[in-house]
Length: 221
Image (cartoon, rainbow, N blue to C red; front, side, top):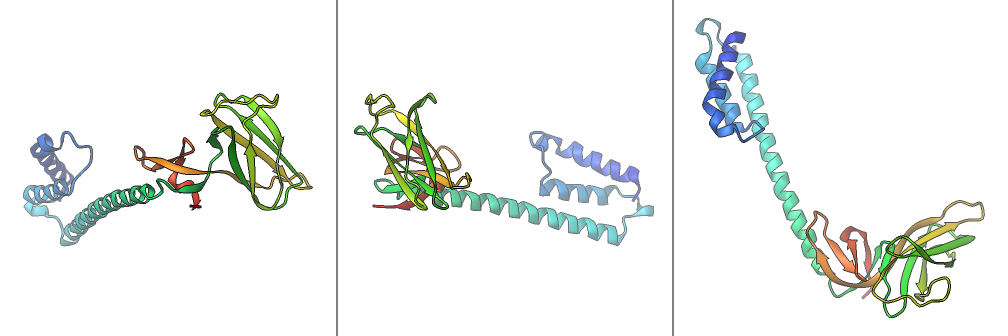
């Protein structure tokens, strides 16, 4: 088949299908098949498409259709998985969980944080910042290998009691005797009071703070 014939076939197909595909930016399986049919209708009888070329085009069409099916199935699977994650997240409501995060709300005059160390630390420095990023407290913590807990009494470095309901963020610096960091991550423990599914990854409300469901380490009660 000549180049001019292929061009004519493409033009014919484009003309007949422009009204139905003008709003779409991608080629569908129907467009692909129409292209093949137009090619057969407009080919030069004296220079027809060879059997090998036509089989290759049919193979391409089959692969294209199969890819469309795979994409559709993957989209359906992703939607089902998202629904499953949401359903599982709902089960957390009312339970006390431990989650990887660094922010908590001051409640009843205190806030409890946790942090994990890969090995024993010689020095552990802790600072607490308010929602504006201002450091309101500095102190030290335990340096045991594994899980450690730090309960803040809600007082700033001057001894003033801060009000409940505000969010505070902990920052932990832990180093071994050689000065190497041994901090893994920080955590909070609290009751799950809600769930937000407005994003692709559901988040849980723990101590008044949004925490990704993927960061839940365990359920304690």
